[in-house]
Image (cartoon, rainbow over all chains, first blue to last red; front, side, top):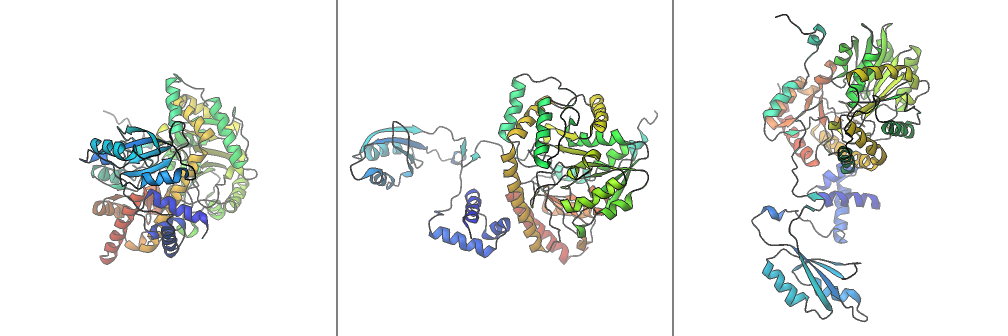
Length: 165
Length: 390
């Protein structure tokens, strides 16, 4: 199987992880077995790293908040950014970590949803005190409009007539 | 009081989907695979252009034939697609949807009693438009055995001295059938031999899944006897903008334009500006939508195979047209029962021609999730019908 098929499978799963191998096979004109095997291999290669439900937490009672932190660091000789990154992402509180090409800061840290107090505590007592960290700048998300390509607040109801020629 | 209504209009049959629509419309949570329009929103950059037109105050009539810029883009598009040259000055009229283009094409050519050949199943408006123009509709019954293609023999058998034109549409609504070059060539021979016109409704021309669309106008000797109809509704998901167009030799277009001029004036101005943008920058949108339709098409055909529902493989539009004859129900009964028992709306074949009562039209212009659920319910429904035959 060539890479194009792989990417197609990945595109389907990325949009809807609930699709079965059989359904993907239908749409790509492959056999169920072929798709099943390929998914298994991609899981083993950690090309597929997991399956998640996409949840709009704003619609729940949950009142935790999302925050991201910009970190400015001083890389250590012979260590580069990787070892600093490891010190940061090892914390369970960190959901995503990106090294950026931005001027002014180096890392974007996206934190797991938490209360304001938990976030403040984590930033001041854990992130800010890492030896190489020179400064932190914490941003709180007020409203999520769109995530994973889906506009969260938009009415998805079909506006078409129920039957049309 | 006298009866004021025109006799001709009284004879028109009511739409074959009305009854089902009324039932479905009252039901909550219906999954509808009965909709003949894209489920996609008009791409945002095209909508923005419509908004922009309004903001700039482009709210006046355009010239009767349509914005010059749009006519130019239409001719460029057709040249690129079929290598056919049309003059934006004398061969194009921008219409209120493909529907208006069909209407004015028929009205421009029909004298009372002229026969228009109309292969069926076909779009619901063809026959009424022929009758309203004073013509006589001569149906040809197409069959699934031949993938709902029209053959030269069928056409020639239907031609009489009164035949003026054939009105056909590929890719087809409701069947999803297409015609390839080798299918069109023998037709063109017959058409030229008998000196008749073709009105070809190619509104689904961008939605083909196994090779590109071939327009009959592009065959040798055919451009001069073809009225080519197209529009923006299906290619760019712009149904509500009501914008289509017709291309024809100038000695025909001149008269179509006359009807358009007196009946309509000009097509909606903001829609025309948006359509310019669609033609200039909409190619990637077409590709994305086509890919999505194709995936759903394959999904449904596989699902049919599994439930043992016979269906020829359609390569165009966004419809499948399975054969329901084994269940011994008229297509309308089948659809109504399916709707009432499983909450899924589909359209009876008979709405598209008497010859199609053994078929139903299922649209895949809806989300994969809806299709998946609808196929589950269809499978259940068929099992029930098979275990309790009518």
